[in-house]
Figure 1: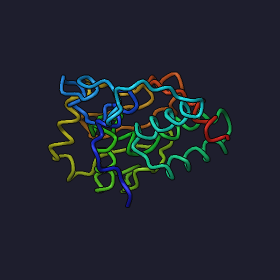
Figure 2: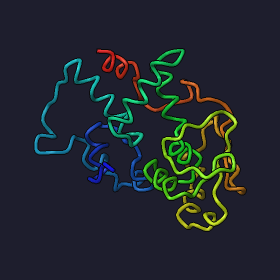
Figure 3: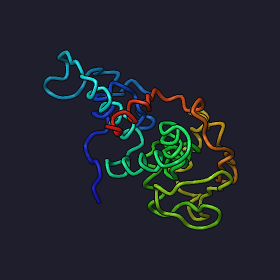
Amino acid sequence: MARYTDSVCRLCRRENLKMYLKGDRCYTDKCAIERRPYPPGQHGQGRTKFSEYGVQLREKQKVKRMYGMLEADFRHAYHNAAAAKGKTGDNLLQTLELRLDNVVFRLGFADTRNEGRQLVRHGHFRVNGRKVNIPSFRLRVGDVVELKDRSKKVVRINEALEAVDRRGVPAWLELDKGGFKGSVKTAPAREELTMPIQEQLIVELYSK
């Protein structure tokens, strides 16, 4: 399976945005974008001027990298959002937020989405009592995500839960920290997603 294996800090520097892809490290002075706030590469410190297409492309790349997705998966999510009722941009962000790997991250079981994806693939979670190991599995309102009994002793998961108060849990999710489970209370509204995303640029790019 294709996957990105290079430094994720380069991705943050490329997009000029701290996307918290390294978990705890991003909160320290070791964060690469704090130490080198310019794009990676030989010409990273040169002046760059983007065309209209370039601005749209950079926005798409930023969101795709933020959620740790490959192009085919991201494009599929966009087409599903475009086919649904409502605003395509809002539908796209809602689709991305309701992915199982993202919800695992949002609930605090993992420090990063990449770590959440790995935990899901290794079969640590159940959805409504059934084992699900597909990171892109889309959750619905009322779904309950819980750790398997044998996974409650995993040190890395417990460390992540201990730090959940620093990051917080979105209002559309509910975490039962002691019970090692969480649920989707409501569908995430656009105003609840505070990340610096201009989804209309992505819609314009794919609409060409």
